[in-house]
Image (cartoon, rainbow, N blue to C red; front, side):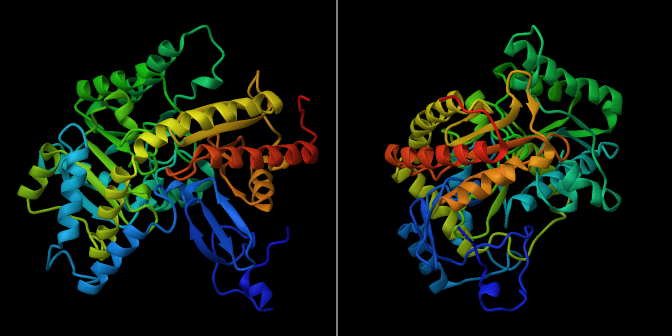
Length: 456
């Protein structure tokens, strides 16, 4: 299939540019788990957009809620007014979040949410008499956003190196990529070993200088739905408490039911001090994100004069109306339960594909956030040669066949290939069959093109 952009079809140089040079078709409409371009070609949204369209496309309840709000007021600056959708959405989130995470601050997206978490943590340290605490430890690889501040805690050399002189790179520890380890330890022992790397880093940096540890409970873009061993979580919390540092969970991709629980951390009864939310919070119907924190963190900051942060569109009434309606649809449609059930079905189908395509391995994830890796040798975990651009070809070949999947190349640098399959939480068993069928055809084509082995 040849894809032509609108500008190319019109014979002119485009004015609009994105982070990719690849031409893409003009989208025309969307419904459920499908999108159509202007030629009438249908695409299965096997990635929920950017893993954010949790409730699917074209949900009338959300659209109608946004219309009602637009008929009342589209914008009211939060310095001047509160809006009912923002107040009610904050109340609805607080009722669903663990560990007293009842103070909510709205932003417009995931990078903004992470940035707000970092700044709130730092201001809390300053106003509570701990001004020497400023280092936020992250993981390699990881992805936490594209602003200069959030890139500082992101472990991805391709995205971060060019901007390091403009910001403050933070210390990183290895992400718990236990599936790549070759040792005699059990999974639980490996989980403890990776968690203990945090303590070693704290001691190496100087405990008095460390402010927080930032992690995704279940991996996102950089690690393709990486699930740490169960032992990892309690040990991380124990270490944070021992040294008086904050635990920040990045739930931008994993939140709002994606993994079969409301939060990814809920699988382990995690107790973070601050979390970031976005993506599924508005399900792509409006730009929306949020920070949630405990009163222990927010109270001193408010008492000292307020949070030194803000965006024009934070707490926008229309965006919050969308978020409130999304929460309602998650409950009404039973989407958290469906994510858990259909995730088991999809995971089983992906594991079946690995038996046919031995270059695919390490299927992982929870709910409808699932990922796998492409290897030259899945036993030794040898990556495919970077020049093959296997993950790029996987995306393109799938797109040509009408399937959208999510893929990145990150292993602390510009190599290693993984992909994620993360359809909307409304997906049915029949639609999973459709996704897996097209993915299988895609892997057949990839194997033929790159001379990769296939078991017949």
